[in-house]
Length: 140
Image (cartoon, rainbow, N blue to C red):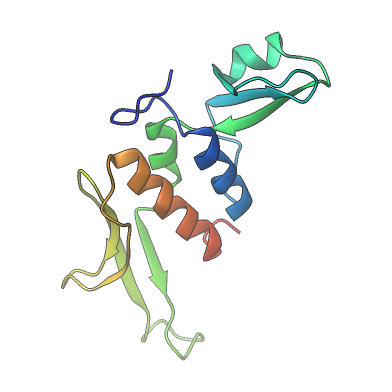
């Protein structure tokens, strides 16, 4: 079900990295199904159907996200406070910019606070940005 150039959902490895970074999992629309009882390759399933189908303690459901659900996790804008956190006079606003192979937060005059690495596909770029946002505390 996974295609590297046009993935359906985050890979198992990407999902684990997103979770480890602290990404909220409530909007995940897929899950990777695994079990320790029988060593199998993880199986990608829609979250709703998997929760019904694999309702047993032996099955582990690891959240996974479609591209649209990951993009929903991106903030349209982030504001970084300056030295004087009491006033917003030194704050800088960065707007979300999504290209074919990268995601960035940039000011109106083009300065960026973070840009994802040039990726094979948009999914990889969005995953990288969501991990960065989670590590920087934007989901707390």
